[in-house]
Length: 418
Image (tube, rainbow, N blue to C red):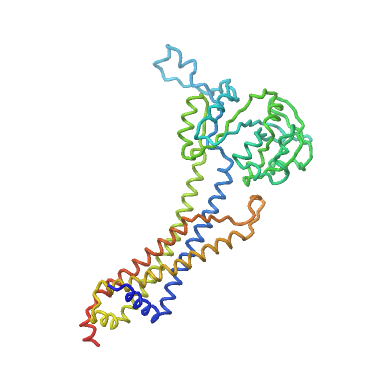
């Protein structure tokens, strides 16, 4: 078997049918280009949409939930132990919102190697006093530096400097809340806590997450400012937000530490399961469309090679008559198919990359997503690897069946017919 000779024959057959060969290569090129572009664009959108929620959502949130006492007096009575007890209108127990012994809990979490970092938080229900109208809202007391490093807080502050929040009695209003109150940067607003404490707060910025309901209700202040507003000591916090090295560890760790600390815990995978489902479905659709394009181009190559075989039956007969066996003939046509796949696929990967670069530079500005300036694109190398490997596999099988048919040609029948 002389590979150099087989390659020369394959090249001669391709150039003899140059137009059809180019059409097949263009089909592969188009398919790979669209495959890479579609996956890069769709997964870029997935990351953007999930990031709107997941980037600022802790992997684990520890808190105390207000709920009824599970041990009701009638259940503790021996007189009713064998009865079915139905209790209506149960009131929540007098449990505390704040996390007891929070400093020790945070120290324990920080020593866990699975934890990247944590940030304390206070969620306080308030009334913003605007003239004679009270607007309900939530002021989140945060550690500004930790919130910025762990949850990209600064990316959502569209106006003002987030570091000014460190000043006492400063607030960053949600954009929706600011519009409702007609509050400008530098204005002083009054907030009243649920306990009746009033405080004057200076507006130093606007926060816009892209989720309208969230921005209408939520605002941010330093944790010291909220403690002062509530009249609570420096140890008072209602939430501990934890970021992990691996997102998949969240459910198990939430259960583990909830049992140890005796508090409630939510993990990101349970709370935001719908986002993972949506991402999975969109990604699945992208792969399905891309692979369909590649399969269609494979059928095009199959048809072209079939036509080439019928037109070159005399050439195949001559090759066999001068000493080429069936395996050599099969290799010639498989080489043609692979050449089309490799050349067309390589050009397709390059064009797909440039197409993604072009999409990434298209302006995309909307008031709902102020931090997004252009269309998002994911340049993950795995899309290019999948596209390249699949183009070779598709073209191989597209060439294998015509090649097997060519190898079974009987030269005697062909020459007799001629």
